[in-house]
Length: 257
Ligand SMILES: Nc1ncnc2c1ncn2[C@@H]1O[C@H](COP(=O)(O)OP(=O)(O)OP(=O)(O)O)[C@@H](O)[C@H]1O
Ligand SMILES: [Mg+2]
Image (cartoon, rainbow, N blue to C red):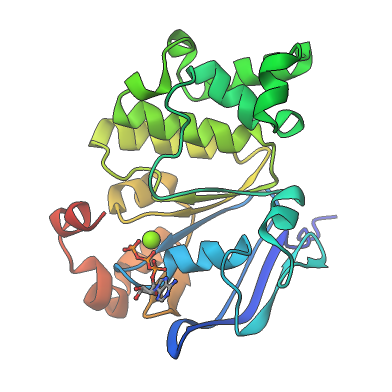
């Protein structure tokens, strides 16, 4: 039996209105468990707003969002997080005075409280899981470094690790390669692809070389609406997408990120 799995996430006809300005208009998309979706679009297209809406930080004025067969449209953000969605913001949000390992332990789902992390013994299982995430994000040798002292790319990877440590079923990654050079960008793509066995991932990015390395299903947002969906090759070949988005040079993208 090769039945397609039920989507883990469904957005149906979602519109977001900021005092008369429609940041999203009638957006529908769905994502299967452990699948990858790449969201691209010019500055101000509504990409971050889409993530904010999924996680409950922004309320749609109409439409419905379903996660694991439950309607979550009206749930509070912490309730949505508890159900298994975790979001990485556009700017890295690591805890700067803690070490790499401590950052991961604080994020681990069963260990959310900062206080508990440092006053009770961390169970072996959680430590092992943090070790395996350290290896995945390539920071095993940097485990005791204070997060403030990490290089920019390393901070981004640590934050991806922190999202992974929550063990959420759906990870929302907003511009994980912002400010990275080509080599770090390539590594980030490999890291994200390595997460798909366990998590569904929605990733937003401007960098087409990164989008190509991910080679996932792409959704193009433009002025709050879905302009086009398809493979990277289909997106690349689409004249409308080229006109509104890909016509911009990579330098423009880097400046905009
Ligand atoms: N809280 C808000 N109130 C009013 N307008 C908002 C609010 N948040 C976002 N907007 C507007 O909604 C539009 C979409 O913004 P959003 O941040 O989602 O774009 P984006 O695609 O993530 O852009 P970027 O590539 O620059 O990150 C923009 O015009 C923005 O100014
Ligand atoms: Mg954004």
